[in-house]
Image (tube, rainbow, N blue to C red; front, side, top):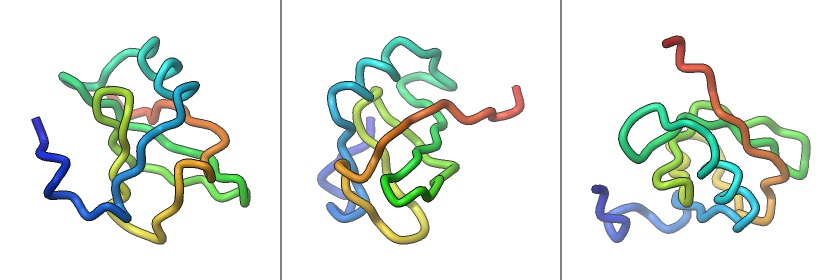
Length: 80
């Protein structure tokens, strides 16, 4: 399990409860993680994100955003 204290807080985003519930009902890509994309309030789609335990995402690249900016979450196709 990842120690969330080691991740920069601007890059770690906790999902709103409605998205946690949605992701919890979807299949995992691996043990405890899902590849996801999010749509933001400003219309941007941010892809290639990793959600852990259906609760958090870590933004590796690009401009960080807030949980309140997320309007939709979907699974990414990882080509399995």
